[in-house]
Image (cartoon, rainbow, N blue to C red):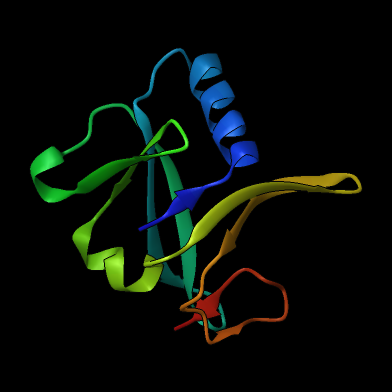
Length: 107
């Protein structure tokens, strides 16, 4: 479903430890931006298990709402550093186009 790289898994585990709580992450999409959709990544403390799918990837629990599965199927979440910038990178084989600023995408 969704893969989490070693670098992203390390960053997520570190963030959960610093927060002092958390079971994993929830990944989804929301409508926004010039291309239509943007990724949402949130830490999960109490998942609503009957209404979300969950699985492990690289030691991280990943939760996803079933309505987002068509948008995220096969995606890889990585954590990258480019010069002074760092952050999560979403590599999604379903993306058809991305806006110039990189904030939103289209399926």
